[in-house]
Image 1 (cartoon, rainbow, N blue to C red):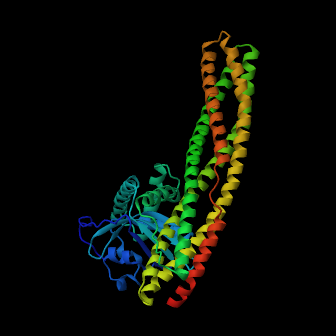
Image 2 (cartoon, one colour):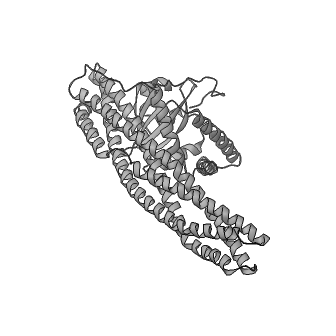
Image 3 (cartoon, rainbow, N blue to C red):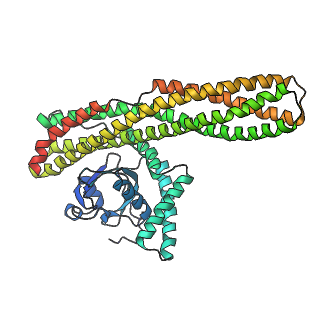
Amino acid sequence: MSGPTSHRTNVHEVGIEDVFFSTTDRRGIIEHANRLFVTFSRFPREALVGSPHNIIRHPDMPSGVFSVMWTELLAGRPFAGHVDNLAADGSTYSVYATVTPLSNGGFLSVRIRPMDSSHSSAARDLYQTLNSFEDELRRAGLGRRGVAARSAQRLGELLAAAGYDSYAAFQRQTLPGEIAKFERRSETLPTRPEASGDLAVMLSTTNQVDRALSSWSMQQRHLATLSESLQRVGTELQRDLDATSKTIDRITEITATVQAPPSLLEPLRIWAQMQGLIQGYIVELIRALQELDENSAENRFRVALAKLHTRMMASFVVELIDADTVSSASMQADAIALLSQTLHSGLIEMAEHSRAHRELTARTVTSIEKSASVLTIPRKLLLSWQAQSAATQLSPAMRQLAGEVTASITKVGSTLEELNRIIKLCDTIGDGDDPATLLQLITQIEDAIRPFAEASS
């Protein structure tokens, strides 16, 4: 559909408590839309259901973003990001959107108000840059698909320049932050004391799921702290490796040309020879740190997505309790069934990530211990050499080398302290609650909703 010339002159703001829901088939045709989606889209429900979801696509949204979204979804991975939508009356509303693949090949989307202004601002800047890039491609005669593909590639380059190795890495950072701020500013999950039977079970169990995920989320925040430490140490270790390589080159050069007592040169030669072994351990450790960091970030992303789906499910359960006719309850029952299935699948994946996290943590701790142990030997050697060189008359070249070695000792010492601190963190931080308990709760919801879903089909 076509919109007005200026698409931002009429903006209607999404409220803090507003949560959008929709599902589509594998082609993107809308099958379900909650009342809020209908209200904000300004389309009648009959016009939305059966139409492509891009009926609300905003012309200011870069095609590269949707290209990335479809790449993620078709690979079976969820997508999350900032999206501007265009309503039927030409007005704009902005959401933070999540889209999750369904087992039937379709997709489920839950959207909220963007809560983190820094994330929104970063997304806005990215989109403006991409729009300008896409305009250039169109003027150059590139077709629609070519523009989308090149724009997606450009998005990856822009994110890489900002420190993200993929869009998945970018969304792993933004979604947990958005959900955390959303929950802090939103009301608690709704209750209906008067509910009875399966409906009461569903609402009570949904609240239990939310509380369990909140506990898990708190554990993930501790993991985020660990993740920051891992990133910092990994960067420091890589920097130390680079500096050490230069020092080794200087040692090789000086020990070959400078006349000095063998007792002064031999420790340096031994230290230089040890660096091959040490670097092997450090490279292995850096790789383990990166894998653990990525796994921790993915866990936080999955927990945040599950919390959003749980909140959406609670809203539908309350609507089902409040429904006055069977027909008005049909969509809620179907939506609850889809959300519970999505949560079930997500929890199975989270269980796999938790298992991988435990294995990665054990491997990382072992790698840290090995690296710390092997670093202790050259540190003692260098400390001994430093004491000896301080009492010796040194040439200018040797004095310069002594300074470089002293700097290396300092770096090794601080790295050892940081490594030991991380070992303690790894020992005290778990990977969250047991997903099996949550899976049992989700199964109870699936059993409770089944009669309602069957009645509506």
